[in-house]
Amino acid sequence: MSAGSALSSAWPRPDAAAPAGRSRASSFGVATAISAAAGFLTPFTVSLVGEMPIGEIILFLVAAWAVLCAIIHHSVPGDLFRERYFRILLVSQGVALLGYVIADAAWHSAPIDVARGWSRMIFLAIDLVAFAYLFSRSPRNFLWFLGGRLAGEVAQALVFGALFDDLWKFGIGVPLTFAAIFLASFGGPVLVTIVALAFGALHLVLDFRSVGGLCVGLAALTAIQLIPRSWRRWTVPIGAVAALALVAGIYAFTRSDDDPHRESRSDVDRSSMIRAASEAFVHSPLVGHGSWFSRSHVYDNFLQIRDDEAKAAGIGGFIGPNEEPEPVALHSQILVALAEGGILGGAFFIVFGAGIFRALHRQTMVESWARPNAVRILVLLFAAWNLWMSPFSGAHRVNIAMVAVLLLLMPPWRPAPAHP
Image (cartoon, rainbow, N blue to C red; front, side, top):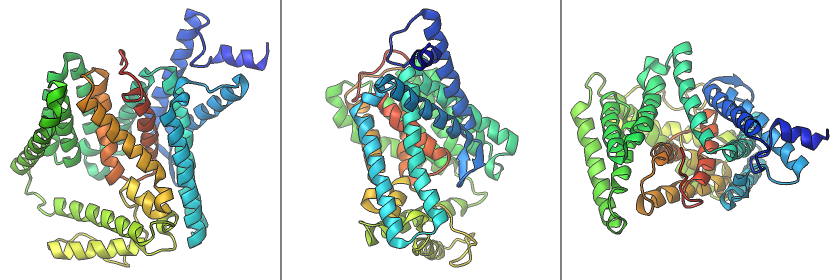
């Protein structure tokens, strides 16, 4: 038996004709099991040039297998690899890596920071290939990976303890939300809207403001899909105002006075990060400041901005400028990429963000409601929030790649599938 035929019998290409019912079922089971395992192990990390999710190591093996399939069969190992948007994502990631190389050369960044910065970009490209392969095997593998990931978050919190001892916010809150939305999708869009509103209120009551707002956003987008297409453009502004008013009203009614300055500290911290990253990009839009800002004063500027804003707001709880032992990661994927690598360094996130908002617009304004999209839209809303308010490292990197390939399963790139 040749190497090519042995490879095909072990795990046939996703675009190959099914040789037999049992063989195809077996190969589907392998891809599904790997998707679920990679998702479950993503919240658990090991120290390899920073904290690397264990699930990402599995994705590396999947990507290597996909490349081997492509070499032996002389063709791409899945239909998603043929999508134009996937090729644009890979090219933009290559451009982003080039931006980092130029920035690090210009700033003479520290070698350890260069390794961390470049590895993030390379690992993300590898993750894209892995997810394109798994989701080409079956779109259902998205749900298996997501379900495994959410189960892993619960397990990680129960085994090692939730961050800040907040099990709802850093353990079970998000997994329960996705499980409820998934089950509600079988009851139709009205039930999804009701459940999303209920969980939005619950999150706001439990002081999980971001997820509460995203749940209300899902309810609004789902409700808009119940309206005839010709009326949707007129109802979107009204729905947006109503959703914001609802979030503000629920939050004001349920706000706890146990720590009246906690929310203010969080807002100051976030706004200072956004401002520091924005100012860094404006200061050097073409070259950037290098990986992790190791030779620039971006972190010093962040600490100074945060100290000034905290004093202006009359709140404490922050370490002052020049007192922190090591810099923290600024929480904004797109702004940090632009600040570190300049306009070239932010190329991927510009393309990625455009894809997210294009898919949300298409789903809201053009497409009819479909059951699989209840969970998918919630994933996209999380991704849009993380694009501006979360770091670009670890499990977030895996999630970015998952969402980028998920976009290929949704309009406008292809018709909405009839299966989950």
